Length: 72
Image 1 (cartoon, helix red, strand yellow):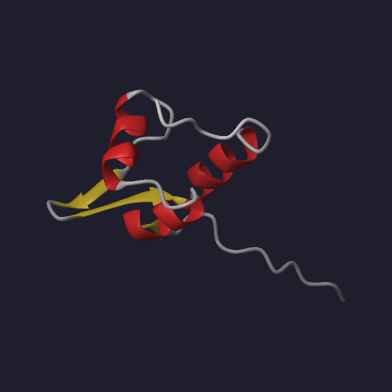
Image 2 (cartoon, rainbow, N blue to C red):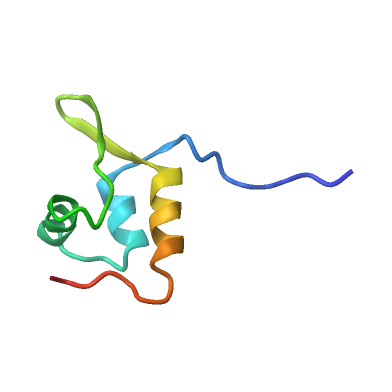
């Protein structure tokens, strides 16, 4: 019997992990990309805790494989 070993896509990714996945852009660049609509909006769970759904980030990375995000 074959098992699928995919990570759960409903987990939340914190900004530190997000930055690592994106090639370590600065924090201000991450928030600029959010403001411009390049990156999906994070979900706020508490006043101090935000995160991105792993599935949203996977979709973003898959759609930008060839072009990559710019530092605009």
